[in-house]
Image 1 (tube, rainbow, N blue to C red):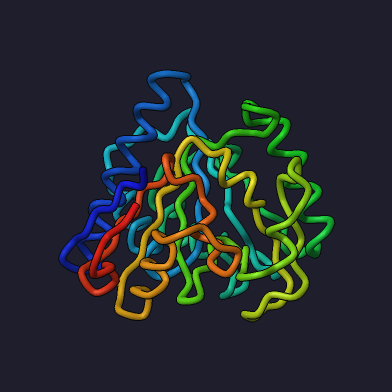
Image 2: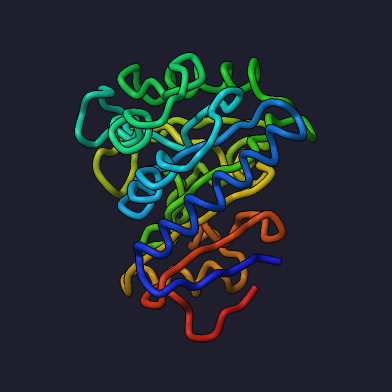
Length: 239
């Protein structure tokens, strides 16, 4: 069952999310000595990362990954890596070798292939797929997560695919790299954040029946936690 938490405003969502992320990572490290965290871009995650950087969290043994990336240089303003570097990495004491960025500048196919190899080499497998401990996600007004868009062919990828190249994103830039839906479903936990009235319909659709027209609704419900503000909250929460 999806766990839905509603907060008063966007700042409260970010505070709750940062606290939840830190607590989950600490628990994973205590159990296995290593934890694997994947980050996404977006306004709400950005504030969450800023607050996470202030948490009293020992980053040793925490490997940082990405849920998706635009095919741009890491210095580009559209880069998710740059966003994370400025909001989290610049403040938190994360050893550089524990940060695994998607090399978007290599293009969708080569970048996806290299990232798949890195996941296989570094993340423990469960049911045949590397299992990340926590994936932080935003949601678009159209219900997309990572760079998995409504009705896209990426939703029908090979069940063993880890990372996919995207050449036809409906949002610029058109070329991207994304974790597959199977990788998101294999994660120990996904934490989805949404703020603002523009996300309310997407959140409601995500919590309704699974549909390829709402990729977020295809996440594994029993491993999904959702934190929203009052403006983004569905009028009748469903799991």
